[in-house]
Each structure stands twice: as C-alpha cells, then as structure tokens.
Length: 269
Image 1 (cartoon, rainbow, N blue to C red):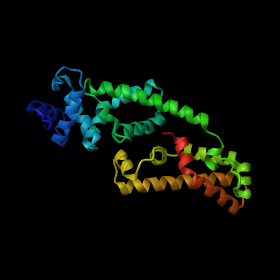
Image 2 (cartoon, helix red, strand yellow):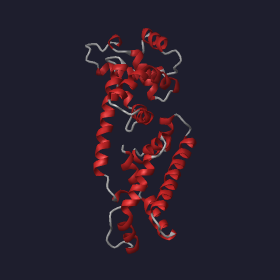
Image 3 (cartoon, one colour):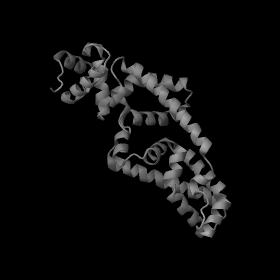
C-alpha cells in the first residue's frame, strides 16, 4: 500500500514552508521510512519533527528555496561550530562549501537524508557539523603526514627515460614546493571546485548541483581552475629553476599527468 499523508501533516509542513514545492507522494514515502525506523511504538507522525523532515527532504532534492531556508535557519549554529573548532574566518567559506556538498550531494548520497526526525533538525545539524569538522581536521593531519616530494612528479621508476628521471631527482623538492604554494594560494572557489573534481571525483553534474549552477558553468569553472593552477605552477617553477624550455616542458608534462593524484592528496577528500 502506498504511503499517504494525513491532511494534518500536509497542513503542518506547508504552513511551516509555504514556498517549497515538494512532491507529496515522494515525501510520504520518505516520511513512512522514518516512521518505520522510529522507536515509537506506532511510529506516529506526532513523534517526528515533520516540518524539519519536509525541509530536509526538499534540500535533498536540490530545491534552491529549501537550501536557502536551511542556510538561514542554521547559519548561527554553523558559525558557533566554526568558533568552537577554531576554524579561521578565511577558511570558513571553504569549509561551508565542503559541508554543503556532503549534506546535499554526497557521494554516496546526501547526508541530510540520514536525519531521522526524532529531534529537531537544528540539533542534528550541530552534531553533524562538529563531527564533519573533526573528520576534516584528522584527514588534513593525515595528508600532511604522508605528503612528500614524490607526489607531484612520482617516485623514481626503473627503466624510465634516464634524462627525465635525472630531472625528477634534481628538482623534485622545488617542483613539490612550487605546486604546494600554488595550491595554497588558490581562491576558495578554485580550491572547492578542484577538490570536488579531483579529490572527491565528483562528476560535472554533481558539482553543478553542489554549487547551484548550470553544468556548463561547472565545466568552465573546473577547466578554468585547472588552467590557473597549471599556469601559476609553471610561473613559480620558472622563477625557482633555471631550466631550458625543453626540460621545463618535460617536467610540466609530468605534473599534468599526475594532477589527479597531487591535487587529490593536497586538497583531501
């Protein structure tokens, strides 16, 4: 039997969020899954925060008005979490974008769907934000621990071009330094889009949904950020190393071939 919403539930959710356009049949099925998982003996809607579940469901569907409403409702809690975890102001836009991707895009699925409705969405959000920030800090520490000079150019390989291997051995430290400096100097927008594409291996469509932009715009942002990263890395290398153009081109081809590895490692997941 298909899940059905009572008139009382429909009136409650639409009174709370009158501007949202949600497929009520899909929401009924979503609400039924939460009722089934509820520890309440009858799983009654009265035991669930249906207004918050309605907002969460709309957010999971990429509804821009729902996302804007969520942002407004949770902004103070997010800022409080940033302050508690001592996230520098300069990194907060970056951190917020990462969190929004986890909540509303995934992979493997939007985390907002994990909200059970047993308590207020705000309380669930506070816990989720703190856990996410802690996970990011741990991941960042792990990335720093494993970073080495072989990330950008790769470890020496037996049987490879001796001339290239010689250049790698001579300049791997300078190349790694130039690349890390460039990544560190990226704008928050470029850093976010490159992290999404290379570290999280998101598709262009997933990036477009996460950023709330058209897929063509998302594709342009990925390509533009990549080109800026490569151009600035080359500029820094040219300043650091007195290499012939041919040698610089060889080094740069290696950097490009390992971009998915080096960007993914430096920006984390």
